[in-house]
Structures are given as C-alpha cells and as structure tokens.
Length: 479
Image 1 (tube, helix red, strand yellow):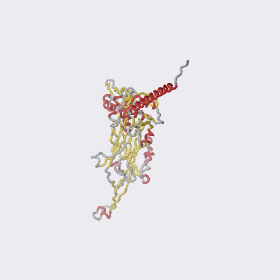
Image 2: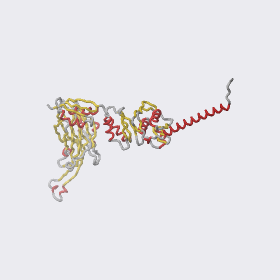
Image 3: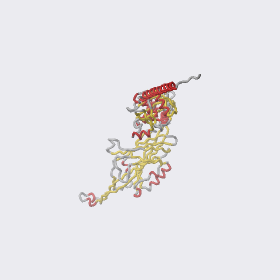
Image 4: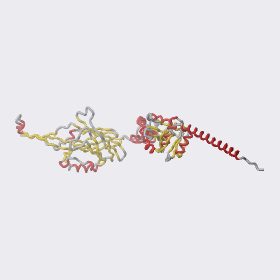
C-alpha cells in the first residue's frame, strides 16, 4: 500500500531547509565582509614588508593582486591600467615597492579610504594638478662590473634627505629614489664607476718607469685603479677601467719618446700700410688652420681695430708667395730675427718689444716716433706628433710698463695649431697707430729763443702699421 506524506509535513520540511540555507549564506557573507574589512584597514602607512616579489613580463594587475595577497593592501585600479612588469624585490616596504613598480611603467597611485587608487601618471596630474613623480623619481640600475656594496656607499654620500638607495644582491641591482636632480647625479656616478676592469702591461722604450709613476697614480680611478712598477723590465702594470687605461696609454705614448730638440726660428716684420689697406691683411683667406685669439677684453679696442689676433699656418712654398704679395699692402720692414733652442713640450717665451712694433722705414730724418710702452709676449710650446706632423701651442700676453711688475700682463685665449713639419705659424692682426712728430726750421733762426717759433714749422702725422710674426719650429732627435 503506498505511503502518503501529508502536505503540512512537506511544507515544514521545505521551510526548515530554506531557512538553514539563508542562514548559512548570511554567515558566509558576514565572514567575507569581515575578511574584506580586515584587508581594507591595511594601508601603505602600516609599514608592511614585502618579501619575494618576483615577476618577469607580468601584467600589472596580476602584480597588484599578488601584493594584496602578500600584504593585505587593497588596490582599486582604473579600467585603463595596463603594462608589463619585470621586477625582483625582497624585504622592502610596500610603499617603496609600489612606487618603484608603478613609476617604471608610467603609472601612479593615490591612497583613498576604500584602498589604493591606481591610475596612469597622466590621469593623476589631471585629477590632482601636479605630477606623481614631481618630488621623487625612481630608477632601477643593474650593475655589470662595479661592487654593489662599494657603489651604495658612494651613492649614500650624494643622495638627498628625502632619497633612498635600495640594493638587491640576488640580482646585483641598485634601486634609486630621489629628486630628479639628485637621481641624475647618482646615475652619472654609476656610469662612471660601473665599467669593465682590465689589466695592461706597458713596456717603456725611452724613459724610466719610475719617472712616470706619480703621473700615472694621479690618473688612476679612486679605489678601483692599481699599478705596479717592474724596474728591471722597465714596465708599468696598470689595472683599471678600460676608459682610464686608454687615457693612461695615450699619456705614456706621448711622453715615451726619444728626447727631441726644437729650434724655433722667429721673424718679426711690420708693414706701414698703404691707404687702401688700412684694415690690414685678410689672413682668413690666406693661411691654413685659421683661428682667432682673444687678446684682452678688459678695455675697448681703438676705432677700426679688434682685440683679436689672427693665427694660422703656411707651408714653406706658400710662405714665399706671401712675402711677394705683402709688397702690395705697404712698406715692409724686418724688425728682428731670432733663434731659440729648447726641448719638445717645453714652453718658451717670445717677446715682441715696442721697438719692433714701430717701423722706422717711413720716418724721415727730421721726424721722431713717440714711444710706445707696451709689448707682447708669446708663450710657445711644440709637441712632436709623428714624423709628418707637429703641434704648436701659442698663448699671447700684453705687457705694459706698469703691469710687468704687478700681475704679469693681460691675455685671454690661446691657439693650438696642428701642421705639417717645416711649416710656419703666422700671427697677424697686431695694429699700432704711430704718431710721428716733424720739426722743420730755418737754420740758426729757428733756434732763437722767444722769436724762434716764427722760423720753425712743427707738425704731426699718423702712420698705421701691422706687425706680422713668423714662427718656424724645427725638430731634431738627440744622439
């Protein structure tokens, strides 16, 4: 006989089951809300430490979820958040980690009551009116050659009070956080010290190794560079960055040369300029390696003149052509010729005296040139480059009578000319207006006191001269 269940019992059973399910759901919601509330109360200011955060090309949203799981910090990313993150961080504050990660892909964050709002750096500036990294920039730099601890010590001396320097020994990486200027300064330091180290042996041919020991030690990279001397083999062993070793090698090649003598031949001429050439010679169109030297900017030049000298070089053949052409410019007078013996790299002084500046070629017997109390001095040094080329360095100075005993004169620039051997340095642009006084008189009557002026005629005329200096270095080897 079939069993019949009364309708009231069925209704009661369904009610109990439904009530139990609703109760269970309520308890689950309470538990979830409690857990959410616990997460929500976590903030960046809680100094939560993040350990073992390692990603390679991971989506930023995945990274944020991992940080939430590890620290309880809740993130609210905007819909347009994207970017890939490659990072390895350990034992770091969440706030520092978040800034490093977001700054690397041009994102930003803002702490809100509901959690950490993550947005693009562009949207951050639009919402809040200032750039997210306005005060603090971050940069992750892996070291390739430099010691991590030593580098951090050097950077600590540079960082500002708001800056942080973090290191990751597992990846040999430095993380910089500081103001933009300080950050760039620290990046520059890393670029200077994170260089490959090499060792090179230099065998000297013409000079003793011990004689250049002090010069090399001054060039070594602090802390990283070392050197040793083998006097028996006349060798220098240098361990340093590749860049610095190259500089040391260039220095050694420059000075490890046979002893060379230099005979410097000088010739000074002055030209009393014709009326059509009162502006002087156009040296820029004549010489090679043309440069101008600022002579003195402490005073304004005379009208029609400049405070610059014209410097260049001419081959032996072109020099002969120049002398022929100068005859058309004015009357040439050779003031002096001299020879000075010295050594390569040594500086000698070539004076150009006032008597050499003033030409007497166009001064008649009854005329007198007024004295000029200035002279020029040229510091000249010659460097041997190779069998075909030499380098000449020239630095002029103006010496006045009252300056010579006080500050040594005034001068500004210098010229460095590389030229073929047997060429000549030409220096022009030295102008001087010479006032010439002339007195014409009737013999005896012109010398009478009181009334003698009636029988005398006194006048002045102006001569403009350009002084040209020729410097020819001749290098020879010592036996």
